[in-house]
Length: 129
Image (cartoon, rainbow, N blue to C red; front, side):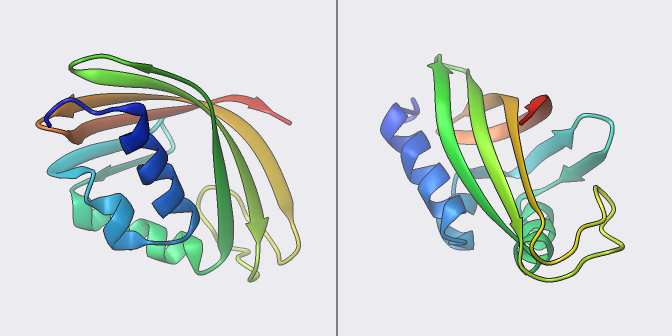
């Protein structure tokens, strides 16, 4: 089906949490645009996968859906994320981090959806815990 469901989002988040790159990237359109506010912009499914291969080699991310609003053409997600650094990364562009560091945040993410795939992802930090 073209319309995404809560079950689709659960599958997406679960794949992301277990570092299943094929599993989570199948939800991205080829030309998806990913924006982390003004801090990072990536265009294309492969670009996002490459970015997360680097991140996930250093940081374990655990996401949990707090709230999800779905429509025909998009979604609003309020999500909790726990970042646990597993390998020193002093020169990480988003935040320098060392093994053992734990960071917890909540984010609001806006997705644009077409044909069952994300075409745009805009993520903003809502609060640091």
